[in-house]
Length: 289
Length: 273
Image: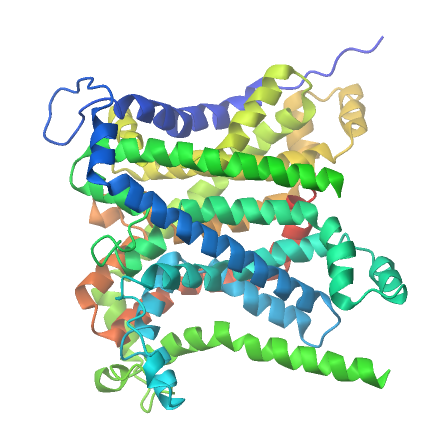
């Protein structure tokens, strides 16, 4: 007769206690605070129902910020995954200096968003390197106020994010490509598939898990974006690049705690509403593939 | 055969040329950090005509870099130790238990990968617990934030360690704790290394946390000192660039030393579905 193995259950306690107190509880209590009038000027917090949400909608803050967040997340997810996949395909082949190239492409994601933000503030400055380069190419009409023009700077920010994180996506796709046996792509080529057909029919189904991880990570990460935007444009000019997390910080620094927390709650629900259906869809696709 | 060689050469040179998109911006700030004020305002990509090494010593003094670096080193290393220890212990139980409630706790942790943290209420609870503006407060905040990632990573790893090993140890009379610290924990070295590197980078680079949670400038970590420095010296690019280089140097060193671990770690752990 064998005694059941006695695992020390208390091992769960340190991590769980911390996580519950400093992560789960703030998120949950945020729901409560968003129904109050909590701000920096008030001694007493009282319940005001949907007041904060009503003024969020009335002021247009929420629609503007979430619209921008969604555009940003869409651009980042599409281009970061496209570029990351392309890089992975190229750097999975037998090349000279492959490891060095992988290392270079991965490097930017080890930098702080702050460093990347200030670096591109200089590079995309109206008199900066990019505009100088366009001038040197005799194409001065392409010069832009990359970061100051409210019509384009949200997209520019998204591309800076892609610059920083494409190498990270590449690494995940590279990991996925290790599961693709060489014989399979070779067999497909011998059977008369073109290079692109072999990618679509052979490689893509096999790297479906990597695709799911990547898409979900880029999507969630970019919906939560804060540092890059805050550092480069601070949400401006006006509200041209205001995203959910810059709006939350703005309300926080003005002492509008309940209002800011209501935006947090919306972001929470928004991320859940966007990512769960996509996750579900992608998982289904993995099973079918 | 010849054709293949030619293609390999073509693709290699294309990939190398494209890597300039990564290297040129970095080179630009490295060169700029050594320039004179007059030269750097041109914002050109060029080698400095006179290398101004003193830019760095000025920034190091003016930017209070030493304090920032020490604060970051303390906060980051404490977080890494805490997350690795408590996280691996929890992962061990989660991986070994077949109980429903443990599966529920695992799901709760994994949900933290998706849900954004709620920072304004976090400050509130920090105040209640007397942790506001304290090193301990921000360390515990980071730990709570990175448990989901670390536990997700490690649970998968521990599940792959055969249970037969546990049974053998129990027969030998080892208690659960000893089994973990003597047998399982050492086997987890590769995943501990990967987790340590990622948590190190995430915490070292994080700006949002201390922006909300640390008012006291003597406790500021590197990103906050950089941000504050740039808002004071915004137009003196040579100083801004040296400041950025000092801030990224420690991560660069860790990356160069550990980069094999990073990409291999990702290959092994995170994406096996």
